Length: 204
Image 1: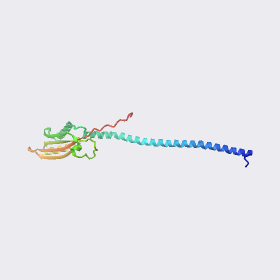
Image 2: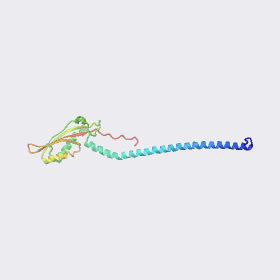
Image 3: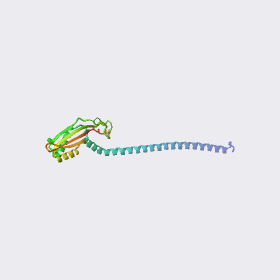
Image 4: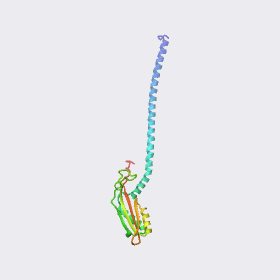
């Protein structure tokens, strides 16, 4: 084809215009598709972050629901393993046990707790299941009563029901000169640091 003819000029011009329009079209479409892909990626990232927050929220709600049980358990532990020696409280518990056994307080011939010491120092080894630094302390308690045989047996059972964690290391029962029985119990009670309340969340 002779490009110098009017027809050739029109054809070539039309092709040039078409190529320019196509280049512009693909440029616009390309930018649009790129922006659309970025928007889709941002949406997916936002959905992932939202799903993660939902999982964390569910975990926090579960902890909130279980907090009452944890506080109840902590309160029970505070009674069984107090934060102080609480010797007056221990004396009261033993006196109540003697009364339930029908033993007059005058016949509680010995009730002598020792000064509390660190558990590892007292036993020579760390307590099983107690992590280092737990500062668990122990005090030995000697209890002796003089009563009839049945009362002594009841007293021993009541000691096992005290609202205080007590580890009995030895029990002896012997007859006295007055035909009564002497119950001698060697045991240990424990002390633990106070459990702090979880820090409150600002604005909660």
